[in-house]
Length: 427
Image (cartoon, rainbow, N blue to C red):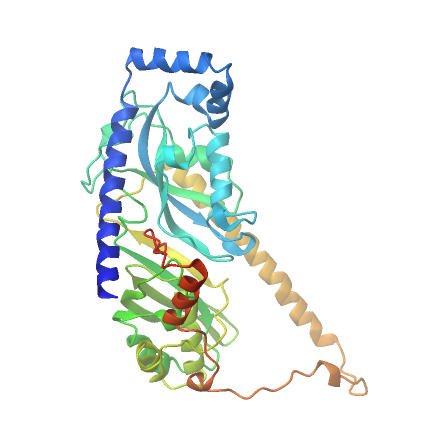
């Protein structure tokens, strides 16, 4: 097992090296204006009865190959309830990524497919999850004559870098749906990856205080800090993910500046280098059980000890709607937009806030109006009474197969072990 893990780490390191080399070559290729290459390409296209020419035109090459381009990071906000997650690979529509690429194509900011664009994303949030700080990176059309893909992290963006450049935020926000907005853009170096260059990610989970014991929840949350094996706090993908150790930098439970009647809105703020599939929603679900007094904070210790608890107990995850990707942090990266665009962005977000508060007011009005409805105890309501259930302790519940059992089954089905190098997207 140690040998396989060592080989996996070596391959991951090699992948990063190849991605860096690929990005550098693409940057060099973008600056190449050799007439001989152009003539050669034209000859190939003409000799194929226009088939390849038409295909490249469909991809955007027809107009885009004559434009300069630069490597850019975009900071993206989206309200998740209507989307089937961020990634377009979800095979369901709509997705946030799908809407972004529609806007990029409509505004003619991109050329070719994702590989040509050197596209990367920091994380792929699940269905219903929102973000105010997702980051994606790709080559975009530029007003600068010399292609830009060689920037270094300086912590500051020079006047030369932004002067006369396309207002990417304004251009994209004009065509994006109301629940997606570009917050800012930043020039980035050729070896940048929105996924691998990310130092840490911060998520927030909103919830109502109610009768939860916050002190017990904070005691339990502190046990997550540091590096642990979180296989019992995620949806396991044994076919692709082989390392379940993740590092939690901070875990805070704080009041939010919103309340309803006597109830206080709260947030859990979780900061980590990367997260497993459904990891946060699983951690939050266990903390809710602890806050309700149904489990002891010590259950966290038992679930983090994979030798003692090699199989994950069955339990439902926390709902997805209150989860928000707040930020993705990078060394020296600063996002910018024009003053007019910033004003328009803020006005749009304020309108959306007012719109949702109006909807909340309507439901509140309905709640007040229900007070005039009289109760008739002669009407039988036995059939709608919820069946009371007794809490079964987590460690006494049925369990899912362990990682080793899942791998054994996968290997038996494949006939031989298959190790997928690019394993487990960081979230």
